[in-house]
Image 1 (cartoon, rainbow, N blue to C red):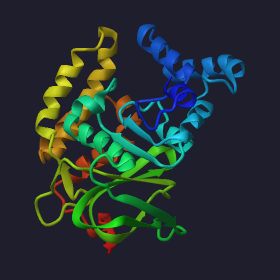
Image 2: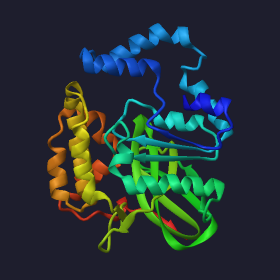
Image 3: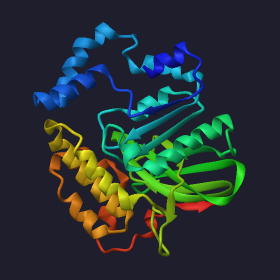
Image 4: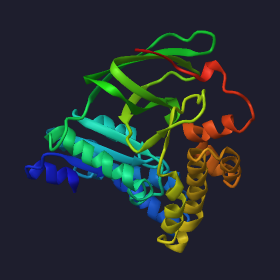
Length: 320
């Protein structure tokens, strides 16, 4: 619907939340929760059956999303809803575009769980492109990677800001690796440019740089990859519990697993690493394999709760 409206009407910008999703994925999700059909096999069967019939039609996200090239687009995606390929959707969009990849229960979970940050993000998006109030900084970034050395892939990302920033701005940098595996850094940006040098086990394929606003500095001298924390963590758990009550009974087994995952992330934001680790232990192995090993926040909980000091190998080298 959003893609069609942008094509047919003079809309100047658009915010996409948790979408789009392919027709066969939507149907497979329905059969999975109502008939207990395996999601992956059902989606494959529907794709083979429906694919030839709807090829190059408005039901194909790739062709529909091309309509968004006429206006600035802000894609807000829920990490826990792993059945939607948001990275591919974001690649369909044309600049100017923005991507916020955040934790939350599905169905508007980002808006509900991080309400104040959501309001600032959307308001800043419109301020940036329509100059409604103050001009927001425009971040540009380039990434390059080298050949594998000693089991690690070295890479470099250089960021510039226009105009240069006198105050420190909290930035989230998410790298995409093979198999949809993510790595994440939280840094403070100031000045005109910043260069980050690092190495990792998997070669980075893509990068997203996104500013945050409603955050607080990470206390202590060394915080590894997390130099700031979210302020809304104190209320996020209560909102997540209220969100569980809105779902039909046949959705609760999977949504409960997502809740325990969200609980561990929020407890980590509250610096309660011990309880965050215990919450992760509530997850069954299937969910663990599908989600946790791909998410950098959950891996940070595992590292931080082993009573070991994060070594310099985990810290990016930044120069300004």
